[in-house]
Image (cartoon, rainbow over the protein chains, first blue to last red):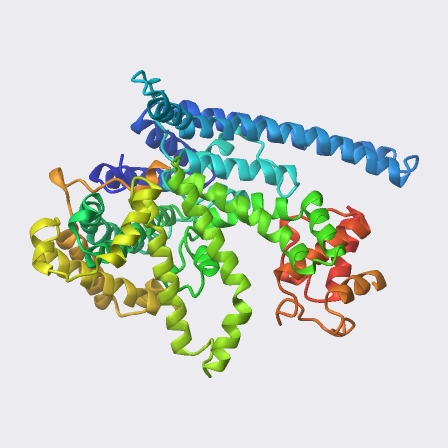
Length: 531
Length: 75
């Protein structure tokens, strides 16, 4: 069931009615049933995977916490007789057992994810080299794997919970069914955001009164998400894929436009989907974490990644980056360098080594092909260069008598970041890293004229579409500029009621009239839905 | 406290750590410095510093760092 379908609208309406007529203390049961029905509707077999993740994390958390409780009781009972060293040794022994349980949970769940995502990768390589080196015509057949919907998202969310339990950040959820809701909560299951237990669980189970404001506010957010997805993203998809699949036929100007449009497409698609998820959730009185914060206004790549897919970035930061950065062996390596007089390198080791792994994994998360690894590592290189060149950059800005806070520098940095990130997306829209580099080269060696008529004729973007999409992009940026000063919806709701209706009617009309609907009036699938 | 100030002096000797309360907010320490301090603290005091401790409030002054170390030593 797509987020953008009449079925989904009816489904949410029904779930909302049942949710609010249910006594407040039991409403979470409606959410659990709604989440499982929603998840199984696509393919009932997917339910097996989510149940394995739920039950295995539940069991691991149970044993980890049991060991913690046992340890506390043991030390409390013998606090007089045990020395400080003995207590420490006991704690270490318990921690070791807990680590084993955590490792079992992580290996099982990330193992399933890795198998489903990457099982065919070695087969593809073996087949490729068998043909290339031995001229073999016999191919190893690919394993038929259907990636369950949103498996990366719920696996990350659940494993984050398990790591938090290991570190003693939260008390575990003792009710298996409540825990199952935390894992499967349907508005976020397809493409995130990746929630934290401490932020989501209390909201899922707290008793909330019906509040029409939330319904209204959620509805506006859903419509805004649909605007981004249907008016912008889906309209541009055809143009981008046509140019990239036949780039030899087009000049650099077309490729540059396709790169710009792809940035708009992916932003409209992903952040639009997130708006729908957050809007639906808001109607149930549950505020999910924000996943985007005006990323195209970022002044550096590091800042961009704090504003784009925020919940994935913070997941990697908390569960990969910091544990590696604060790891004693990496710290020791850094210190060795410092003690040998390499202060500069020594200080950077506990930052750059973990960052390298974060970007390698972020690349792999985005896809099994090597182009995604290249994409991830390019991000790493750009961030390192940005950090290392900060001093030179500051001196240059000073020499030019400019200010980092001035409009000129802020615009320049936002422009540069936008285009660097857009160029990196060539790895996303081309089938191989080689193709991406070729597209990048074409952009500069073949930058001849640009014939707008050719766009209308050949590139599934009619004149009217072109005008609509450009206007929509202007609206999007204007909205985000206004948003910098605070919530746009709050401003709308402070207007007189008739004006609020005008805004809503304009939004609904824009989505219904200018939304790009394919054959059978189906919206395209969400790009991140397949992750 | 003396040990902590000694560690901090090893990174930025020019700072008066008895009065300075904006090590992070004023960007006197960058992320490289913070991680270096953390490494030294973990080693010196045999404590475990994890992601949730990596917030500016814990590293803005020598006193804040001292509080963090005391908390972690008690755990």
